[in-house]
Image (cartoon, rainbow, N blue to C red):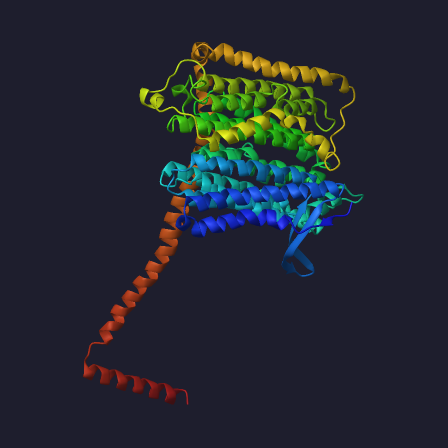
Length: 630
């Protein structure tokens, strides 16, 4: 199907960039009303243009929209263009990014209204949206990579937004550096692809690998290299350590990064280049294994976290693991489906957590909450809907996408198995338990707040609660939009393994039973003041210590990677290399010059008789040398 040329795609990308420039240059001078109008209005305009492109795509029968902006540079006979590409997958991603992103911008007007850096905040938020849209709309890996690196920069600025706090500044640096590790793999994959295929345009790369004569390069090698980059952005083991610390930024930033944008970039990359992974079973197996391990690993940690945002952070890690499992077994459209539903309920949960924190004057520890359901009813109702959605309670959005992942984890002919299904089913049970635990500890039971905090509890302003209501509605009904069916022409679903079709209804019923079992377990352990949970904790103190310590991964990195590197840097490069070799060499040259100066300085004694004698001696020596060699 031939592409359709358009002139709207550049507008989608440039509108948030204009917001960044206007607020960054003029925001502090023109006041908060101007900042709000520009900071929220331009992302909303980008969403409107995206909707127009979506309807144009439908009118064109699914033929992708293409816009070449200009030729970036030429290398010999090859040219590299800034070109944007809008197909079915791009449409889903761009609508999520601009739609949910715009809602987070509006929510931020209430959450950040008293912050002295209001203009800077919206400038950074718009910049983040610009780079994310470049990532999603870019036709080539080169343009995508510009957006990829750009969201890394913008996330560093947003996570460390309150940089006066050293811990928050360190969290921003940690996210930035960890992502650079993954990006090294991404770059290597790009180099290998270009040398083998001769292009970085992703539609052409897919066509080349799925053609009759695939490129003479290992698809699994390329797939694994690209997945290393995806693991960095989407926080998969072992590059997951930055994401929980990213909670240091303002809560709307957490919602933007963790719900609909940056952390889903890795999922989008693998789905976009599905042509490579379809002929790379080894790379797909790696994606499945890492995704399943991350989902289970993060879910167990979330069970014992007490910071409301940290619970949601580890929940994000786990849900991303579910998406990668779907990618690994070839259900690319299902992975994007869960990405889509996750954008709604996770944004609602993070912004709901922000509303709780706002109501409690900055308190984030659920051990000092409780009894909030009646005090902040809108926040509670929306948080409860999103919690049920992520747990997989039907007919909410998360039920549909998670059930599909469970089905293909069992039945896909491209890597599904009973063992994988069992692990994902148990992880889904943990998801339901830790999310309903969070709901109970935050909103039910007796108040555990201090008297001062409890006195000031209040519902958030309409700019915040209105967005929560919209996201809760989308979390409830979003699953009825069949994203896998919409994407099937581009991302066909894998066939079920032989004999597996008869288990479809059993998986459906099992998914519901798992979600309800998690609800029941959370109610049993935390519904009566968490007394039973405390007894379990006392019975397994070492296990609780390991989970609360997040398996000590950060400590292991510090001991086995950071400290050796610091020792090498200080002892070898600093002391031996810099101080002794380079500085020592320079000091030796300087000392030699000083000694030479002292010796030669004796000749320059200021004695006219000595100078005359030396001149005569020189002339005599020159005359003797001339006569001897005549």
